[in-house]
Length: 409
Ligand code: SF4
Image 1: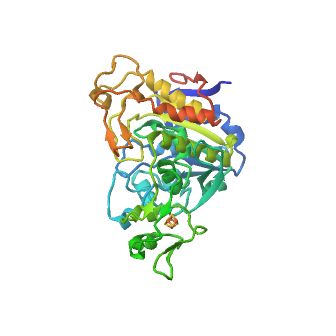
Image 2: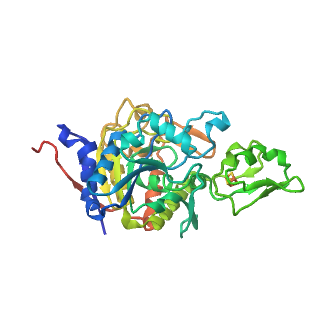
């Protein structure tokens, strides 16, 4: 059966047709959100606050108007994110492409710099997995690669979730939209590591404890300690899988393995299935803001010129359909010759094309970014849609219902 996806164009002719105040809430109304929210219901709006130097994340006003809409319905809105991979910069002293998101303090500070505060949202901002990713729920699933997922623990506090995703490209996953906001955004800090690397987490218990000095210091739960023989002891019961010990380990005594690009994408979708299983399929409402469509994710500092024009908002109860429809509308668009696609040779640039097949991609074998100057096709963006469909998260088959309010009095 086809899923329904509502489409609101990014074109506007007056303030009464804005994507922020009007089309966002209307997109929620179309998928039955207004009838689901009862007085006093807690509604979490999950979005992304952007890596420190990123400038293409969703503008705060889009989320603010969603918060106001929840309040108008009698609900109580919250705006949420979750801790990013790695250890805080104040500990490592190293500034990276992904800085500013590794712990609650650090990320809320970045959020503030990006315009997201309790005051600007009119709602409480929070990290779904706690101060350093320690707040987790272990959800059993029948995934392709995982049978357990580290869901962000504070999700249990909410009655409904609005997944407000910035839809754009992604060098690893092919694109980032609803599925990625579930499978990376709604799992804990450790859930993100497991999506990227897999479940391997091995310690060299024969190594001297001095090799673990930084790891012992950063562990938030004292799961690591020195044994009577001067060797490491790890208390698995206490471990919250934040992987910060690995992030500060300089001695190669902790092994988290690696994953191919296909394994990463599959693991990300397994995570998404765990989040939906835990939270409840009927309680999640998907909004894809298909604007500022760069080839980079919000989780990097890079914010290149968008490679297609703004498209608009898509809403659905189906995360697969809402992502598939965004992909299709991007592929039906003309490319921006001043964007990265203008640098890529050997591809047709005149009309529509499967643009996501040509954007730069991360090569997990060489650990390097391939800017794809020769225009090699790679349909890795399709993997997440196929895996999600196979796991029963939704369908790639949809009816696109365009809602036109532009120019109406
Ligand atoms: S042992 Fe490592 S992964 Fe586990 S809680 Fe401590 S720092 Fe985090």
